[in-house]
Length: 225
Image (cartoon, rainbow, N blue to C red; front, side, top):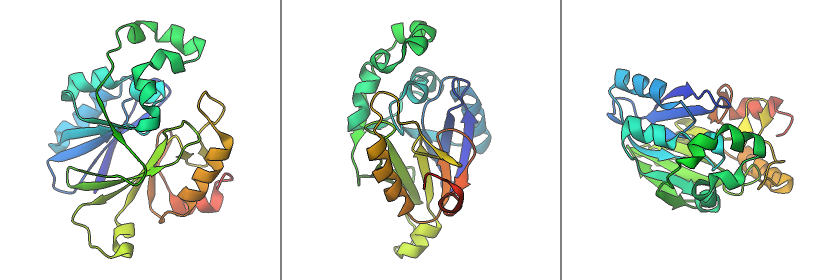
């Protein structure tokens, strides 16, 4: 597997594409504002076509780029945890006044996307990948992390772990974690979620903001783990 990424201008959201080596299809993670054009150029260089878009959670900085992503790539099947679906249905209701004013023109033209809901433990089979959903609320009610493996990976658990990638959205960052003081945040739920994350196999981590890291490294140095 390999990962391509662009950084959206609004709040620096990481927008990812993940694909199997030698594949022609890929899966996208998150739709940051203005993140689509750069990512599209990277995909064209690699000859990759997106077949789906997975949203790690429903905060505005991760979803409001959806119209631009659909313009670039066509209307893709879009996945979101059921507990955060209300956030794409009424994004203005989840914003603070500053962001609501800043993003008013975009929100005024917002068309509610058709999203497919996922739940804890689901496995999305897309583009030759198995994407296992791990529900990790705390940053939002529907925040999740995603263990990604190639669908034809060996059945041996250790072999799968060695080949897996972890996309953590705003649950876990390099050296930090996501905020819990925004509407829908829950410090106690976040602590429980971090315990779940600590129990996952050591693997590369691709967060919603900031640089990539490794889970074993974060277990050693991240003060929140």
